[in-house]
Image 1 (cartoon, rainbow, N blue to C red):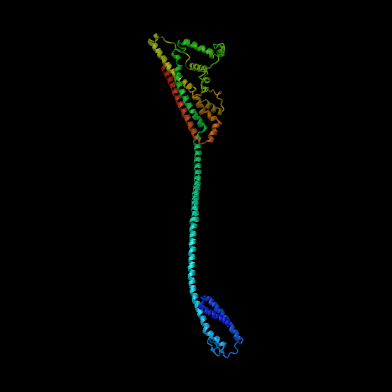
Image 2: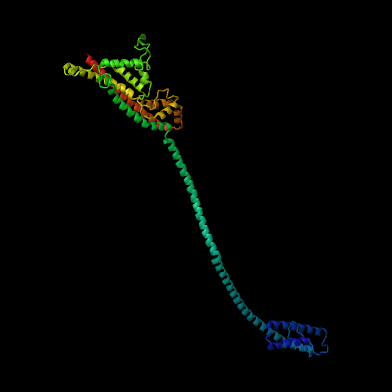
Length: 453
């Protein structure tokens, strides 16, 4: 007990000597006071102060420290220490502790808050600095690169989408263009028939020019013997002309079996009767081979026999000085003009068959499609106007290839119809030309009839 009490007292004194913390003092006081109470209880319970003459009467229900000392001794001393020293000291220590603790707590809280706020601000600054550094050096470049990539991607996607639309539109445009090309090709593509006609069109022009030239020159050539022109066999009169014609007949056209084998020749001539065979010499030949001298002579002699195989006698200059001689000579000219109409009609038939188109390959091919052999057809190497008209307006329609071409290209039928209409107009023109010559022949006949009456 005394040890504990001494410890307590020592602690009390240490308050002024050492600036120990209130918390430590509280701990020490509590410890010593507990030890003191424990010692006092042991003394009382063991009757440590049995010989004490004093007794303590504790008021029932009264507070501790309000005891009346009843006797002297250890008990009284303890009560006195308890009442005077211990409680006051404990109260003071407690008050000091509370005050100090409050101040310390306030100071600590303030310091803590300051430190915490400083740390929060420091951490916040660090976080903001890190965020700034992270944004400027990590996030911002990444965002810029990502933005650039996104823009590039969007541009590429836009370009690709535009390319898709352009491709689709281009495909549609190509399809439309191809469709138009197909339609135009079907509508405007010249058929083989039109190509053939186009190829032969220049031949028509050449053949027509040859026809017109021959039609103009032949009548004057045929009538020369009747005019007793120098250079002809009729220059010496009808006797010499008749002898010349007879010699030509015997040498070229005599048929030994004619006239009951009294035809005037001893053997059959090489060109029997070709001076009188009109169909064989003219109409059976779409193109007349006038380059052959024998054929050309046969044709001339045929025309001579058709019109007039006789020629007049020549008239002397003295005869022409008389009125009768002049009248007779003028009458001859009237006959020359009338026979010129006949020669004109014959020349028209012959001139249509004169070669000159230079379209032999085209005509032979068309006839081949029709199954006609050009050699058997009596064609020359240079088709005439008549031959071209016959092939294009008649023979080409007999070919299966022509019909097939019309089926394969229906749109070409319109152009083919136009070509056919063109040939019809050409035929109408030829018919008109022929009608003019028929009118001349009719007028000549009327003139002769009037003169005879």
